[in-house]
Image (cartoon, rainbow, N blue to C red):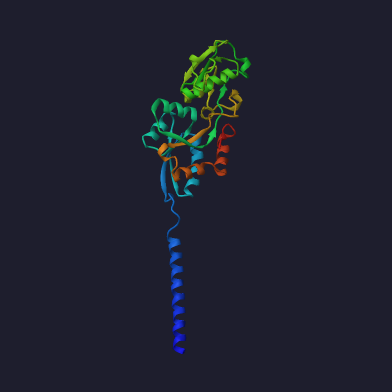
Amino acid sequence: MTKNKNLHGFHLSRRAALAAVAVSAAALFAFAAPAPSFAEDKSIKVGIMAGEEEDIWRVVASEAAKKGLKIETITFNDYTQPNEALERGELDANAFQHQPYLDNQIKQHGYHIVRVGYTGVWPIGLYTKKYKSVAEIPEGVVIGVPNDPSNEGRALRVLQSEGLIKLKDGTGILATVADVTDNPKKIEIKELDAGIVGRSIDDLDAGIVNTDWALKSGLSPAERIAQEPIADNPYRNFIAVKDENKDADWVKTLVSSYQNETVKAEFDKVYKGTGLSAY
């Protein structure tokens, strides 16, 4: 009986020891093998416009680094370049454009680029150093507008909303000067690169300037005598990637690294209310 009792005790001790080893092994495996994730210090390149956006994206990069995503920003001074670079694979993402602009770029160049997350909106406005209101604008003035298709149409719609011109019925957001059917003040509409309009304001009577370029050009809200409405604005900017990457884990992390209160606080600080978060 004693022998059997000791053997039974041995079996219990051996069983307990094996259970302890199994628990320890499971714990070791759980520690050594975390849940699968892309976040193994993945690095991406994001194209942005030079200037204020650099300050904002430093904060975005800091937020992304906490999640294992390293962001290298590549700066541009020309709206046409970031999509070219993204399509060629020189960038993993870019953040500078609105949907009408991308739609036009896709139509012209066949890009395989899609929107993945909104960033901000900058209401385009009519700036002048010569007049205090639209009503003061006389006949024969020269007004500059951006010459890229989407922003030109956007600018012309502002002029129409202020009663300075009338566009052909049914004209969409890609209106051009050729769509102007009525110009009672005989305004000369001068088409210029979007980045040049604001810097040329001293040589113009007025100009329709994108808000980000207005800031870069040293224009103040006091010199803006009209702007497009904010409600239902189709010109919200966004982060874009190649279509093949739209569902990638790193894309979700990139978007969440932008769309948060920390980045919003920096956005508000940098743009001082001239730009608005749009997500």
